[in-house]
Amino acid sequence: MKKRIFICAVLMTSALCFASCENTSPDGTVSTSSPSAGQPSDDSAQNDEYIPEKDADGYKIEVAEVTDAQGDVVKDDAGNPVTELNIVDDKGAVITDASGNKAKPNIPAKPSKSSASPSGADNGNNGGNGSNGNNGNSESSENNAAPLKPADELVAMLWYADVANVNGKAVFKNITSDTEILDITFKIKDGAKNGKYEIQFFEDSDRSPSFCNDGDPIKDLDIKYIPGYIGVNETAEDTAVPDSGLSFAVTSASGKPGDTVTVKCSLKNVTEPIAAFNAYLAYDTSALEPVSVSKTGFISTSGVFSSNIN
Image 1: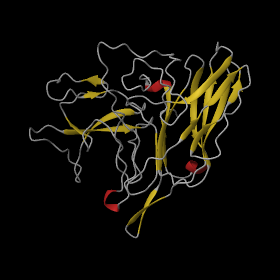
Image 2: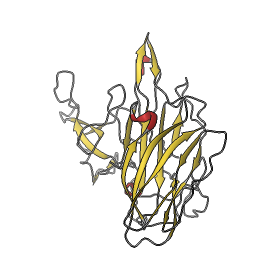
Image 3: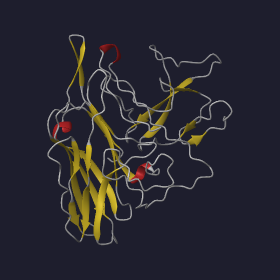
Image 4: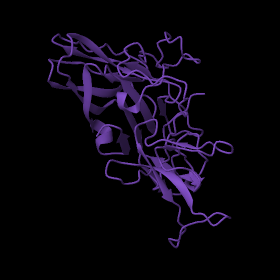
C-alpha cells in the first residue's frame, strides 16, 4: 500500500491543518518505551516501534516530550513521560504547517535483517516518466513500484499553500496559473562519464508523489511528469511539454566534470487550483550530486516549502 507522505489541506476552520499519511498513531505520540530516533526497538512483542534517525523523505526525526498548556510534561498512567515524533529542519527547528501544527514524520518500513541494502548507484531503478512514476521493469518489487532508494539518493520536495480564516471559511492561496517553482543545482562529479543523465520522477512503496486541490473533498490531480537531462560534455535538450494536461516539467542543462549546473522545475497547463504537492526526483549518483534547491516563481513568496536538500 503506497503511503502519501505529503501534507494535505483540511478545509473547515475546525480542522485547519495538514497531516502526513504515515504509520504512526494519528496524534503522532508514542510512549516513553519507544527508543530514541535512529535506534530500533527491543519491544517487538507489543509494538515493534521503529524510529529511524531520518524519515523516508530525509528529514531528521526528533523525539520530544509532550507538554500541556501550562508547560508541564504529560505522563501516562504509569507515570512515564509521553513523547511525540516531530521532524526538524537543519537548524533543529520543528517543522510546522500553515496553522502552526507540528508536521509528523513519514516513517519508512522497517528494514528486514535478511534483505540487502539498496545499491548506491542503481541506474536500473528509475522512476520513469508517467503519472505513476514506475518503469514496470522491476521484477523484485511485489507491487511493481521501483525498489526502495535511500533518502540521500533523492531530491524530495513538499509545498502547501498559505491559508486564512475568512468569515469562518478556510481560504487558500493556491497556485492558479503556470509558474516556475524550483531551481535545482547539481554538481557534475569529477570523473563522470560523457553522456546524458536523466533527472526523473521517482516513486516506490514508501513514497508517492501527489498534487491536490482545495476541494471538499480534496482531490488528487492527474499530472504528467516531464524529465530533464544533464549532458556531460554534450548538449542536452529540453523535453517537449504537451499542450494540455497539468505537467511538472524539468529543464535540461549541460556541463563538464567539476561544473555546477541548474535545472528548472515548472508547472505547466495549470487549470485547477493547486493547494499542495509533494514529489521526488531521482538522479544518477555516479555522475551527479545535488547542491541546492531554491524556490522560484509563485512559491518563492507564498506557502510553506521543505526539501531534504538545503
